[in-house]
Length: 141
Image (cartoon, rainbow, N blue to C red):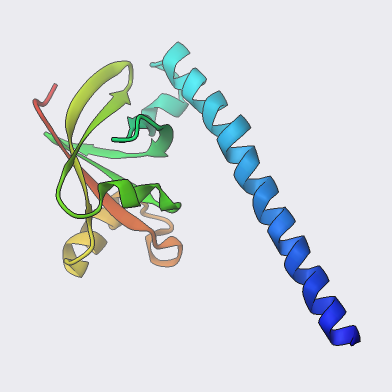
């Protein structure tokens, strides 16, 4: 009986912790970072974080790598599911420039994924993982 009680209490504690972390990021950290990116497009954070507007109109800050007419991001949360399958229209705000393009997840080319992640997350690409998101911009700026 004690084992069951410990198991249930552990599950409840885990659920509470997950909820707290989720609320922190969705209600505090993400909006605060988004506001900073909008108010300080030349700031230090804006050099490596973009504001991505998903097809659902949800806006999230995410680290990025821009190369010519493509932008790459690593998705660690579940938001990438909105971009699975064929490409979907997205908007990015990079250093004050609002750009439009088509975003999709790249899940079927491990060599390409590793090549991009080596540049996107050079210090942590091996142990963080994540799903690669590729955005083809309508026009390079």
